[in-house]
Amino acid sequence: MAFLGRFRLLATPALFLEYEEVLKRPEQLAVHKMPPARIHEFLVGLAGIIEPVRIFYQWRPQLGDADDEMVLESALNGQADAIVTHNLRDFSSASVKFNVRLMCPAAMVRELDQ
Picture (cartoon, rainbow, N blue to C red):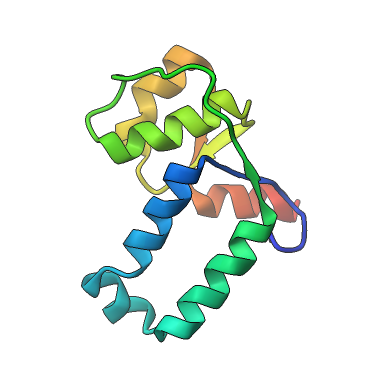
């Protein structure tokens, strides 16, 4: 849906590099089974549609996980409409504090299909 322009993706360069690192972890490779060349192609395509976010203000510390902080900072500095994640529990307090919508991917897909 993102590749079709149904919603916009935001990320800082640091967050994008985290996405790459996660995709290449052995436990993730076992799940998605993409060869290195396919991972590279996917990341190039993803980089082409992600709206880069410049950090004007660091909000840390707000969350328990430094990697989650990158997501929150991208959302806040990029003026995101929502943070879409399976990790709802860890973002819930920041969602309320910063008045940013929090939703799981399935809820977002259902909303976009309406």
